[in-house]
Image 1 (cartoon, one colour):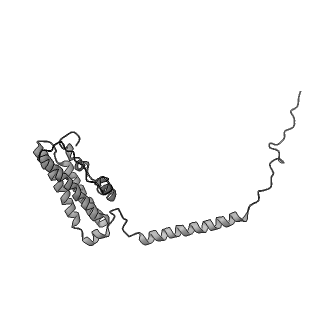
Image 2: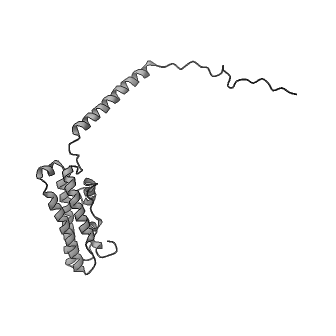
Image 3: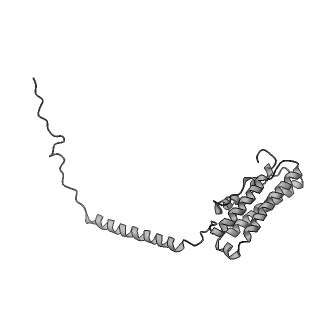
Length: 195
């Protein structure tokens, strides 16, 4: 019989032994300097956040008192405008659109009852309220056109200076508290299956 050859370790002990690669001290210096810079930037960021935690964030409605009032009033307005019946004659539909406008203006007036100092401290609030008024103004113009017999005109949401619909800016400023209800953006669909 044949005897198997004696087993040898794999891989052989002598094959994989290499001296460690040379390490430059420059890497150690770069790592230390990078770590110090990183910690300095991180410390500065936390310091900035700590000092500015209570300041107004531009572009967002973020004052808690304003949020409470605006959220409550917006919820009331939204339920009102979405709950109004939009069927019936052309005059009844125009009347319902006017009632929606009244609900929006009531919301704006109640939010404006917040002190002017608080409103001024939350920068976009007055501009946001002005956008609601612009939306209502555009809807009033649309209702007047319909009343005069220009029924082929579609409603166009008022635009910002950049040409974007104002509802995008309005929704961005009041992200979690008040988005513009779709029924306000499409009065031309009142009484149709679109709304």
